[in-house]
Image (cartoon, rainbow, N blue to C red; front, side):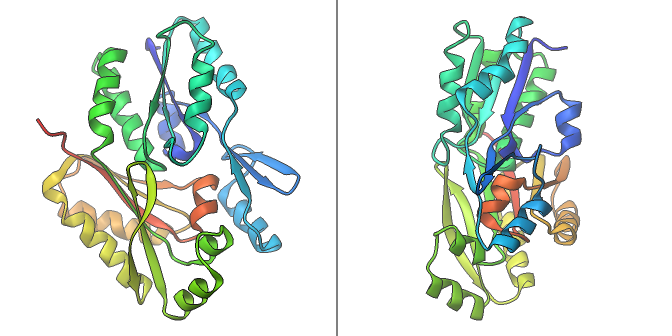
Length: 285
């Protein structure tokens, strides 16, 4: 057992086997359909989410963990005398970070560190894994937090959204935009910039064309990649993820290329068949 316990929330989209292997604590966000509230990844899985959306025609609401949730998660490890580093969903997207800060105030000063990833999905997961591996190398909490500060701005997060339906249901585009987009087969591409989901561009035409554009954008950044870890994260797009992984394995020198599944909170905002490539650039010396 290490002296540092790492936490993330359910939006980090790390593979479950990694969460278990590296003893990463996960604090789930909430997904609410009507009067029923579920913990992301605990009480509700992505296929069930899509079934409920199809049945109701409405997207669920999502909510951050409360300060009490964080206190309950952190307390057993604080009692063991361990330092905690929690790497959160972007503060620009959720109150999750702020609620964790409130919780941290309930513990001795310096024992619970709350770090804002300014990212989402496996853009958080990349930062978690950097921290985990630094701890394995014997780095202190202070060293790891300094590393995270350096890595955060180097994370590249880009997703192709397969349909405008979920953006429309979520109020992020109009009915006319949804109709025209569907007729023209327009697929928006989202990047994370300064902690916010930002429309980067749109691809018109087949899904294969959109996938190829996503791949080419990543390949163009090969000289900048740190060659440590690349994530392909998706929501029910398994075959596409496998194809992207194969292409990246041929073209890059990455030590590891991992496929991960987007959880319920991420999927509820983007919809089925969303897929992204996420990596970190080398830290400037």
